[in-house]
Structures are given as structure tokens and as C-alpha cells.
Length: 305
Image 1 (tube, rainbow, N blue to C red):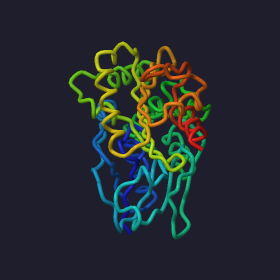
Image 2: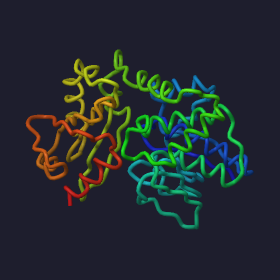
Image 3: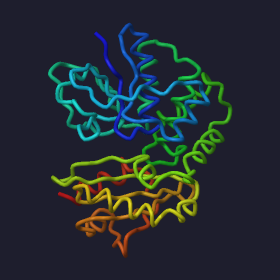
């Protein structure tokens, strides 16, 4: 029985590398699986794939009737077309349990850690399966990316332990230098369309019956985004016009450890309800806010109730 291993929409480095790593793990356990993705790799992910000699997964837009292993999500809103007739055999994730349901028992590893690749590292260990040098390097980078080089509040001791062990396998002596190299690639915006920037790391959520989009751009210095900020604001307004109540775009400065949030909403007061800060104009500075998953989505979910 063949199956696809697939991550969420607008895939980030964790989503792509998790699909590759999980497919490798499942294959070594004797299962017939193929890694897949719901889109092309971002510049950061391209950098990681090239650095460690990995191949980007095939892009799959429709999974109707297919067997699936999900990585890095379990929300229907993040799933591909045809999910209603697909069969989910397993989930490996580090987000809250979503609304994907199954007709049969499944193998689920959902841990409160900073990255799905941390969960997968423990799965490799649990099943006694060796991790190749290239995949270890990719997993290491995914953890550094998702935890913002350990600065994110989502980072746990398990993430740091996984990085330490994966670095040895991958032959990486300076993980912090590798992390900064990745984020410099991630910070590059020149020549990229506003749409691609907004959707580089973007997710839609159902909040109290409202469709709410939240994107995030992580850079080493917010001044990099200053020339494109007006364009980003116009683009999220366009995205909101497609039938959303609100669209928020986090511009995260990883060195200052905070985010400027661009806002387009039918009810901007939800920002004050969520963060206790009144939005003057079309943006607000949120000191210490680095994680969409832990610091932004839960706050908005409460505000929309």
C-alpha cells in the first residue's frame, strides 16, 4: 500500500524537511512512501536542500483517494484538495491537534516542542533507525529555523538536544553560524513579489467562524523590509478581499526579538483584545513576540470568541 508524506500549505523548511525525513524513516521501516509538498521550497529551504544534497519533494495539489502521512500540521485548513476522501495513516507534528479525522486508528506523534523535526529525531531513535548525514543536516536546519536559532518561546530542551545530536551526525561544528547563514538567506527580499513574500510563511485559520490569515517574515533586521512595507500592506489588503475577516503579517526581527504586525481587519479592536496594545494605524509593535504558533494564534483565538 503506497502513501504520500505531506506537509502543510505554503511549506516552510520544517514542512519540507519533515516530509523527506519521515518518508526516509517510514521507508526504512518497510513502508512504501514518497515525500510530497504543497508547493515549491522557499529560498531558505532551497539553501538547506542544496547544502545537504537533498532533493525537493514532488509537488502534489490533490490527494483524493490517496493514503497519507501528515507532517507539521493536522488542520483541514492547511490540507490539500481532496482531503475528504484521503486516508490518513499517521501524523507527526508539533502544533495543537487540529480537526483532521480518521476512520481507523493511526500512528500519531504530536509533541509540544519547537519543530516537527525534533519529533522525528525521537521517532528515528525510538525505532532504532539510522539518520543519514544529509537528512540530519536538513533536520538540524529545520529546528534552527522553527525555533529562530533557539530564541523562540516554543524552543524546548528537546529541540536543543536534537540539534546537538543531529549536528554530530551532519558534521556541523558551529550551529549558530549555520543558523545565521540561513536567516540571511531568509531575509533576502530583493526581486521577490509581494505575493510571494506574504505567502512565504502564511496560514489561514478558522477563528470563531471567521477566516483569518496570519503570515510571518523573519529577518535579521527590520530595516531590510522598510522598502517593501507599503507593498506588503497593499498585498495583505488584497488577500483579505478574497473573503477573509482579517489578515495579519508579522515582520519578525530575530535580533531585536520582537515583531511589527501589519493589520487589515474588519475589526481592528481584536488586536487590542489579543495583545493589550491599541493599533494606531495599520501596524503595531509587539515586543518579545516571535512565535505565531505560541504567542499569536492562541491570543487571537481568545479575542475572536
